[in-house]
Length: 349
Image (cartoon, rainbow, N blue to C red; front, side):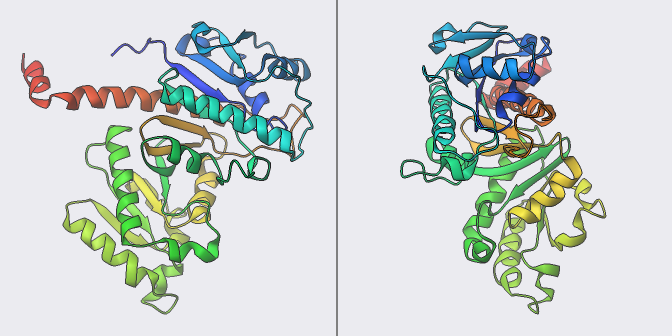
């Protein structure tokens, strides 16, 4: 496979009142980034030019009006709006949400049409985007509807990978959202992603308990004994290499996670607090299980520092590299599994 192929990376602008535009442009101040792939930002040249001026950046913008005009090796920005957008740093606004959604919808359509190869999304504000026309809590749920497959929020940083049984769910609703079907589906998605996206032939997966101390044999809740443990036992009987459930409070502190290829947490904060503590700044949010590759940085809109020039592009850059790596790994996986007997014959020659 040619690693110098012209991979097109679609990039959404995120919330324009946040740090999205800043981290995107900072990522491409190093012109060597453009030697690896071709970016396509879904926003407007006027808005990106405003950010360049405000932050005194050197990134050169190539404005286009349609995807057919993308130029390899240039920082392409496709115009979604003609009128100027007035940035209000750190503010939640309907206008910002509308532009963020317009960017996401246009980029997703391009992804589905294979006019871009992967999608990297800048952070959005959930309050800004919520409307009668867009009732999704975030990127993952929207993409799950738009793309084929069953999505899984998979946080990735080097060899640390943390998936979630439930993601943007109120803590009081977590137990009701976890059942045998969900457990088996999510673990199946993690297993398939580790094999297909990360090249791990026999994945070892650890699962964290739902309740403190895995319920202490029913003393602190019975969900682990009634639901989680029986489901894991069935999965093991089917040949899956599954461990746990483990008590979550000490699992990351004692470095137990290093023994596994991935960890499945029961709910959002159980997985993301330790993940971000360990990897903050270079972690990546990957939406596993879908027909196309989408990643994002592991942080939010940064309203508290928006407009100050303090935002680091490190996690965003990591999101781009992870997306490209997974895209290439998937292509390699498809080639190797297209005709196993044919490939085996090639190896023996």
